[in-house]
Amino acid sequence: MTDTLEPVAPPAAPLTSPEAHDLVRLPTGQPPAGARRVLGIPRGVERLLGVALVLGGWALATNLGWISTQTLPKPGTVAVVGWDLWNDGTLPAALWASVQRVAWGLGIGVTALCPGFVHTNITATSRFAGQDPEAEQRSRDAATEAYRRRNYTPDRVAAKLVRAVEKDLALAPVTAEAHVGLLASRLAPGLIRAIAKRGG
Image (cartoon, rainbow, N blue to C red; front, side, top):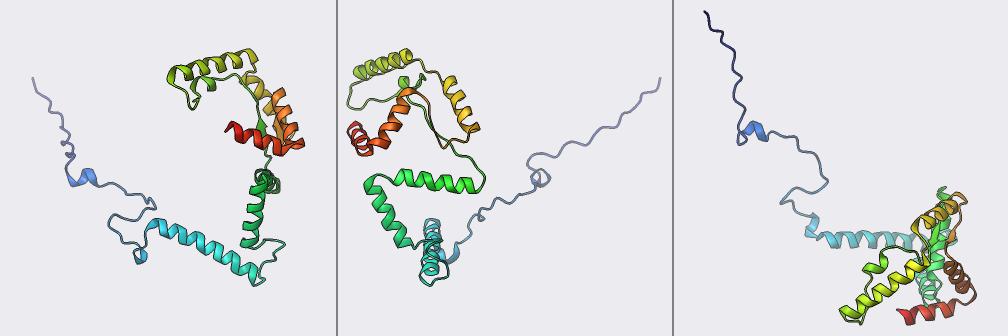
């Protein structure tokens, strides 16, 4: 009877061998460890310098007439107008109008959703400032019960959102209180801001 010898595979290279660490290094965009920065400037300062260069180029181009101020106003003008809009409370609406114009120019529809009071678990995790834990829990329970009785579900909000997007509406109030709040903000914006400040 003759024994058959089978070839034995060579042992695998141990993990500590050079072959086991011969891996391909992919670029990460990060500077190698120990690399020095240009002029020794910290990264945060580099970013601020980038912003300063953009603003400086903007100011130079508009002041020298390279770019018409009707196309791109001067930085100082933008700052003054922005401050005025902030003071009279119309800055958010102005920013939203600008976002809409940019989106429309790119063929993108934008819809702002005003849902109102919707029955979700937000009341179970809300914080009520100035209350001890027991009083805060009672406030959570009362709010949860009120939302439960209101019983306007997220599914109904989603359905109205889909219809608003299909119609390419810029603003989509959902519940009755959202419609009332939107109407009041248009008729008496100062009053709504005062109520919001008192509530905050």
